[in-house]
Amino acid sequence: MLASFEGYVARILRGERHILSLGGNSHPMGTRIVIIGAGAIGGTTGAYLAGAGHDVLLVDNLREHVDAINTRGLRISGIRGDQTYRVAACRPEELRGPLDFVILAVKAQHTETALAPIVPLLADDGFVVSMQNGLNEEVIARHIGARRTVGCFVHFGADYQEPGHILLGNEHVMYFGKLDGTITPRLRRVAETLSTVMPTQVTDNIWGWLWTKMCYGSLYFAGALIDVPLKDVLARKQYRPHLAAVVTEAVQVAHRLGHLRLEHIGDFRPAVFADGYTPAAEATFEAIANWQGVSLKIFTGIQRDIMVRKRKTEVEHQPGAVAKRADRLGIAVPYHRAVVRMIREIEDGRRPLGWANLAELSRAAGAEKPPAKVGEAD
Image (cartoon, rainbow, N blue to C red; front, top):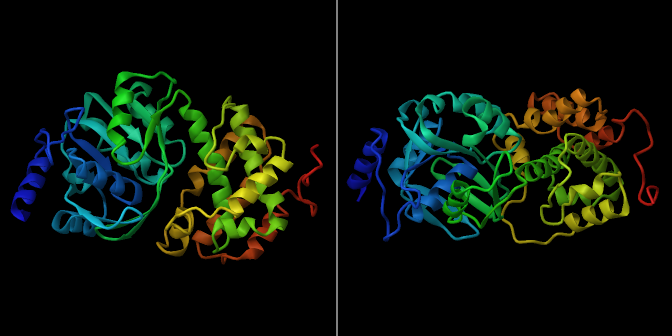
């Protein structure tokens, strides 16, 4: 079995195009799926696609991870049990074209670097799906065109544990959309293919979904200033007005950019923060603080980057991206600026995690009083 699998990996690396059949299933689009980034999201996606019979190649910079996957398989433990999947993996320099179906699942700050070897290898009708945080679809479209770029809202929770092992913490529907809002047969096939990983839907409002996650991401980064789960932060009601102010800034930027149809992620509905800390916003935070859902993922990916993996977060491409767009629009976002500054200092080892950071955030607007209290907007 091992020898035959190693032969399959060798054929993949030579660029041979064929359909791998497992249990009678095959790739409905008739080509291999190349996933750039085999971490939490990309690795989980690749494992479940391969397990369903799709022809998958994982591409990752971490040699130990690639070697472990090719030698032992990719183990996915967590809420769906514990199983190891046979899937081919290689490093970026070993990648060969032509590439037809590419999924980009790297950190936002690595998008340009990850695209560099992909663009010249992409087939004329090839396309890239961005399974990332941030607004990387804009970057991808600049390189290959909007027509060949597919946006994706991905929100399931997974954590890289060690080479060859990923923990799946929770599940969530994925949304796929074209940048111009059109619904095409290829878009539907992409969603159908990825439905073997998570439930999927196509949408004509992918930018609404991406900006909803940007708003949620701003809240996540504010919550990552301390080393406790977000729901525990929100349980301390004195901090809610200031955390709400972070969300309000992001919503205002999204609205000014024309993204008026924001969606919702569970109990998180960004539109209720448009007018500040209203009773509806308070109810949203109350619901998140009291959420007792089943998840093995306690800390956000941002917190794991800071506390466990000791690496840079996506701060420049989430709250930092909101702040840059606010600058162009002439919108003041003091809370975002404070969050970005403090996260940078934490990354550089110049600031410890702790509740004092939220106290400092509360002074971000340059006044001792917090933003509008519940009831003042009535």
